Each structure stands twice: as structure tokens, then as C-alpha cells.
Image 1 (tube, rainbow, N blue to C red):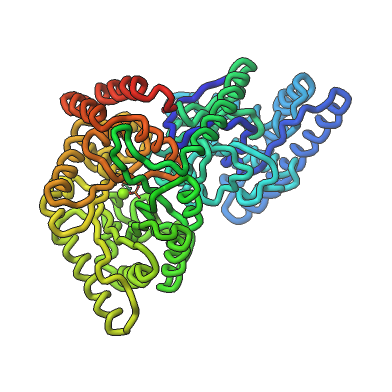
Image 2 (cartoon, protein in one colour):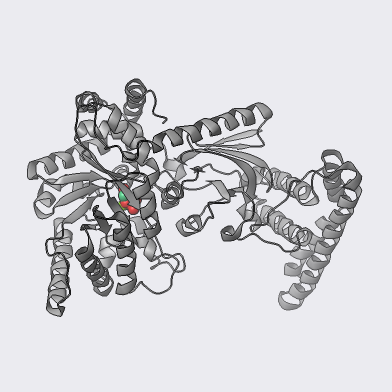
Length: 580
Ligand code: PEP
Ligand code: MG
């Protein structure tokens, strides 16, 4: 058994067999081979190895003819390893003694070799490790008859393990069969993590290197609450997790009963609890989990996985789908926030050296007015059919906000001239997710109808800690006093100018921070639909006076560690039933 610790990004427990994506999505069976069939399995292995060796020799000949002998020799070395009797003896022993399938036994041995080479200091053998993976793929291809899994088309349940997954790969996971996933890379507020929450599957990211320690078919556990990946669990651990899985299911079931109850605190303050969505199909999740509306529709997901930008009609179609599902509840549509980790999956926008500080989001739209106006037209047209609000992301200066509003006014004029109906008084909001915007919030507040605090980015830009980088994950904390001071400033500006302040980053979906934010003045929050019942439970179990006292204490603390420890303690005290 091996336990890896990473960052918990989507709660729950998954227990299942591993599908390791670095083996090019080969599904490696770990069936137990009965003793009477083991000799045949060993023969099958030898055949697979011989076939792979022949292929490597053929490759050697072709490459030598094309590029010369020294390049061909690489494949000659592959063939030599494949023909090495010591290799087949070791794999055969696993088949014979453990009853492993040929694929699983072979993968186990290759991963042990790779790990040994990797551990040699100086990284001199890194290319040899790549060779071993190449050989592993070749043999698995032969043994499995080149059968590959499509993540969209799985037939059995698996736990997906990968170095990294892009947001669109994550979005394409078939949740009927993918029980959960774990990745070596990634951070708490990465978009991959957000999409995992949306899909309602347990996920842990930022685990560091583990792919070499696991073979496809290994039994694994993902603990999405504590951020653990457990490889090859022992019986006791497995039993514990099986029990936890059942408890978790009944906890979720209990939360469902909250669906039709209002998000009102124990002292009678009604809080507006909204949902974050990425795809129109998620509107159902929002309604089913009892949201008061959509507080953040991340429209950039309309642009992922496609070569051409969506047309006005395609935008409108998506927005109308959401509005129809939401009935008369409000829907906040955020304009395109493309860039940094939200690229078109087929082609990056351009090769910037530092895309997080580059031409992204509203900056990109302001330089591409056709793109911006097309989306604005669709948002305005949708506003004739429901309670639509428009939200600008990544605004960092007052002038930028004014430019956005000016373009919106031009688009309104165009629609007016064309006689196309829209809501002339459509509420306009700005995201507060860059420290400069938080600092200037008293001025920005005079020019908009609402604020939405994007803590995912606000934390990363305040602390200069990439939200996707596991190496700086300990710095990346919404509980850092610097972040809290900025948030307090924004609430203050909102109160002074009488505008609503929503919090839509992942922070508000965590019970202990929700408790803190309520005490700081939060009355509108937007979270992933999956967290709605739990956050509703938080709201319904506290009194505002209690939360205010906690917030006051927190604002006197000096470090994120003190804040988080104190909040954990208070959450347990005030809401012993809330799982966090
Ligand atoms: C945020 O930054 O907190 C936010 C809600 O926007 P996104 O996660 O889409 O960047
Ligand atoms: Mg953001």
C-alpha cells in the first residue's frame, strides 16, 4: 500500500481500478489467472515480447536507412531488452507466483525498472526512462491487440490517473464510468479542478510524481476530502473507505432534503445562494440542488475544443437554454475570460511568456471587438427572455471598465436601430479578481450595479502564487490575511455605494470560509452546484452575530495558518454536522 498526498479539489471517495493515461489509455486487466492457465499466460507473454522485439528490429532497419546507424541503434537497444531472458523470467515469475495477467505483470516490472533509473541522481537516465515507457506501450499494444480506451467510451468503471488533464479532457470524462481522478500536476483553483467539481466526481490534483508507482489495473482509492491517493490499499484501509463511501452517500442523501428550503440564517437573514456553471447542461444541476439562480456562467467553455469562434446564434442558443431551465431566476453571464489556463484546446492564442499576466480575458476582448461585440449582442438579446446580468472578468483599471461599458452601449445602440428587443436596464457587474480592482473598489462601485469577487484569481495575484502550481500550493490560501483585507475592502465599498457583492470563487464553496465570509458581510454567493446543499446547511446553521464575531477574531490574526486553524476549530464548534 502506498499513500500519496495532494490537493483535494472535489469531495467524495472513489474506489476502483486504475486507468493510467500515460500508457496511452490502454486498459490493463488485472484479472487473476487460475493456476492451470498460467503456463498459457506465460506463453502469451513470450509471444508479445517476441513480436515487439521484431517490430523494434524492423524499426531499427528503417531508421538506420533514413537517418543513420546511431539513431537506428536506439531501437536495437529496445529489441535487446525485449529479448533479454532476465526480463521475461522476472515477468513470468509474477504470472506464475501471483497469478497476474501478462499485461499487468509486464507493466509492474517496467515501472520498477523506470523508477530505479529515475532515482539515479543527476537525471542522466531520464531518456532511458522514456525508452522504457516506449517499450511498455509497444508490448501492451501487442498483448492487448492495440485496443485503446476512449475516455468518452468506457465500458467499465475506472479511476483515471494522469500526469495532467486539460479542462476539456476533464469535461469529456464519462461520469457513468469514471469514478474519480487524480493528477500529478494542478492546483486548488485550476480549471481542471473546477470542472471536476462540476462533474461531481472525487478528485485530487497536485500529487507530484506517482505515475511510475502505479500500473493500470491496480486497485486505488481517491479521497477527495483529504486529498489522498491510496495505491494498492490493504484490507483494513479498503474496509474503512468502503464504510466512508457509504457514510458519504447517506450524507449527500440527507443534504438533498434541504433543496426546497431557503438559505436563511438562524437569525433570519436571507442569503442568495447561486450556482456556477460552465456548460448549459449544468443548469439542471443548479435547479436540482436548489440554487436561487446562476451567479456565474463561465462562457469561455463555449470556445474550448473548437477551431472557429462561436457565432452570435450559437451564443444565444446556449444562453436561452440556461434561461429556460432557470425559469425566472437570475442568470449572470460573464463575458469571455479566455487566456492563461483557459486556452482553446487546439491552438494557443499566441506564445506569450507569461500568459497569466498577459493579453487575456477582457484585455483580449478589448483588442478583438468583433469577438466582444458578437457575445454582447447575444447576451443582450437573451436579456429579452429572462433576468440576465452581464459581468466583465479580470478588470484591472477603471478605464478598462469604462471601455467595456462604452462598447456595451454601442452594441445596445445597434440593436436599438435594428429593432431587436433587449433589456435596456440590464445590470452590469465587474469581477473583482485582480488586487488593483479590490484596492480601487470604492471607485469601481460607482460605475456598476454589482461586484463579483473572484477569489481564485484574487488569491493567485495577491500572493503571486499560480493557482495551478502544486509547488506553491502552500502559499495559495484564501485565508491569507492579505487576501482577507482586500475582500473586506470590497465589502465596505459595496455597502457604501449600495451595490451587491457576490463571491464566486471556490473559497465561498468551502464551509469554513463561507462561515467567515458571512461574518464579513457576504449576502450573495455563487458556488459549484455540488456544494450548494452543503453551503445551504452552513447558512442555515449559523447566526450572523456568531459569524461576525468569528470574522472579527480572524481579522486580528497574522498568518494564513492561524486563520485556517481558527476557522477549522470554529466550524467544528458551530456546525459539528458539516463535513469539511
Ligand atoms: C475566480 O477567479 O475566482 C473566478 C470565479 O473566475 P475563474 O475561476 O473562472 O477564473
Ligand atoms: Mg478568475
